[in-house]
Length: 112
Image 1: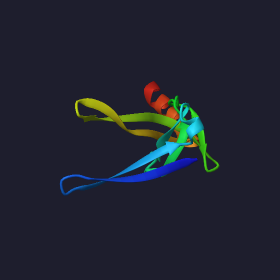
Image 2: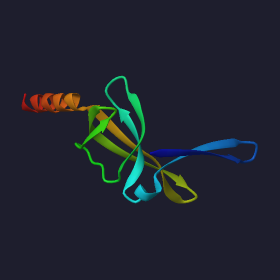
Image 3: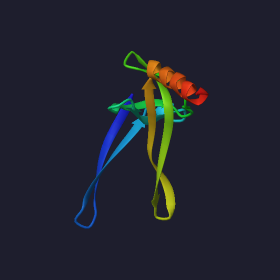
Image 4: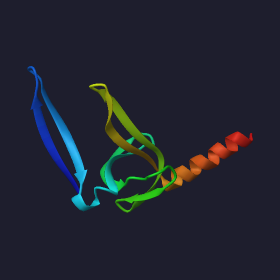
């Protein structure tokens, strides 16, 4: 289950809104929220999902009765006050059939 909390902070005439997403309390050590993006053109946002921390390329995940294969894991950081802080965790996924087709075509291209 994903919970979202919206906080508002007011600076010098500027209103900033931040969205904080967290997973259930008991799962927080082993599961974290990822923004899941299907990268097959056109890119489709599959939403924020609570998945294990150690997700890697090539692993299969099932979202809404459809199987996807992870093609990239992206961790973005931003420099704030002299320290890098995590800002985004994203999984770039492909449908499993498309992932296998891409591997096959890459292999054909390397052989020619």
